[in-house]
Image (cartoon, rainbow, N blue to C red; front, side, top):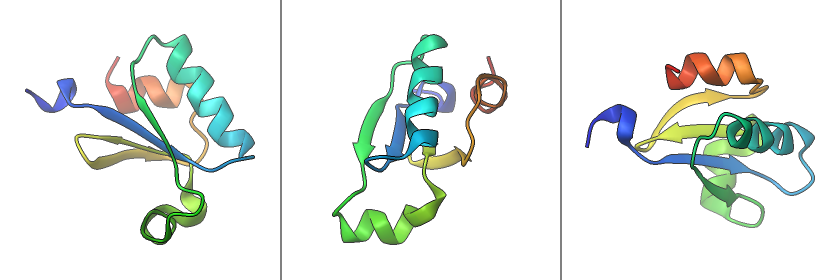
Length: 78
């Protein structure tokens, strides 16, 4: 599996409007992804904390913060 084919994971937290926007934008772009809520998970909170939303591909952070459609297109090389 190439890096471009690796699984996308969106780390977010409950009540985060930027996270909700990122999820909606990924869906609009037709990108399958796994959604993981970091709330209550000490290790994920330590790793991603207030950087959410954080998008990873194959375990590597490719984008975080405000994830509008154009930024996601660039990060995903669409």
